[in-house]
Image (cartoon, rainbow, N blue to C red; front, side, top):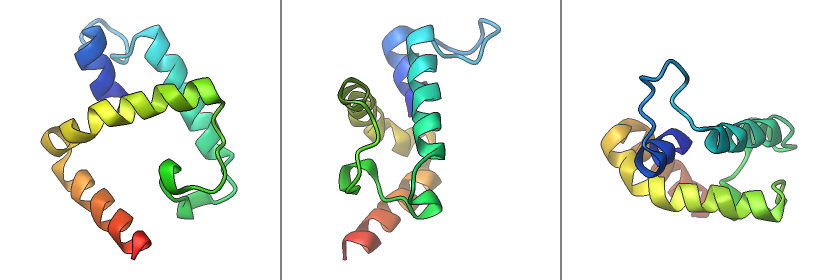
Length: 95
């Protein structure tokens, strides 16, 4: 989702020899991966919005929410199977 956001908002395309992320988005991705690796729920982690423990600092939590809000609808175009799986898992957990 961060890659989609960066591509659309910051004009990154991955053809500049790097991983396609601007330094700001790379920092956010590294932070998110670190927090996820330390999550006490492990593989069974609920979506952040439904999680009882908020592991992100408030500023980064706002940044990642902005990325998800923007990239969510684009996920259907770029990763349709992942999107459907995510929505199914989300519905099953809420039920």
